[in-house]
Length: 296
Image (cartoon, rainbow, N blue to C red; front, side, top):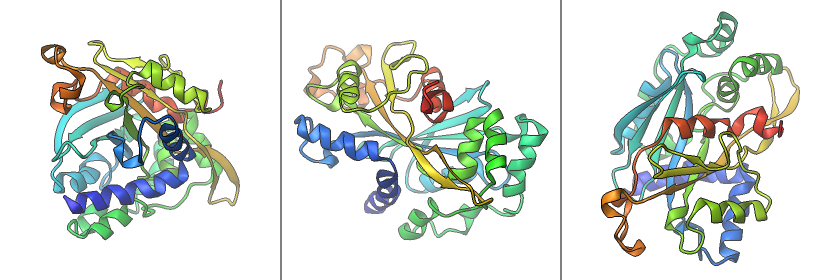
């Protein structure tokens, strides 16, 4: 398990540095007495975005987590966004769930496909196969390793016109897209209504796509997210422009009907709603979209 701890930290440290909302939220949670230290926060899940092209995508990326004991679970499909996804259950409840999505590149226009394949076609073998998956440092470094060249601003903008997801991945690559605070594990601020009020009180902007709280049909999975941080990006043409980076998600998993009689202190992960919900995730994806980041 120590190996997986190392990999999670190698993912989280750069993410924390690039997403100022993380530190802002953690410090405010300490001030409010919700937590004494950051490690008390339960990370519900982390998410990654990939491109569905040969040697990359889900089939490649999932190998890392399957090697470390994760179990592949349910599939999800997002017709309008041209995405497929799976979630992966951790080997121990102390670790976050994993959510990996993949762009159906062949469903895009020929022009958009040509841009993506310009960068990915030179990859002639699965880069994960070249890793020693038992070498945690090598695996940790892989998440931040550029697998293809940077696009020009014109290429990025052309992709964004058709798929903002595609534009995000072509620039950010396998960078951690978000991590998720389990609000149901908190004592006083244990509903999204309370936690969102707290977030907005400290200046965190929330994703309003589908409402600030996205609710599964069974009412047992409730999710909110911040709007992605805008970060300066330098493109291959030399131009620098702010583009969406990563964000923070907040999840509230309610007890399953059979366990709703249990006192809160007796509830564990197995008693609460598992998995994900395509309708919720569809709107959470939009945390990096211009309608949210530009407040349109």
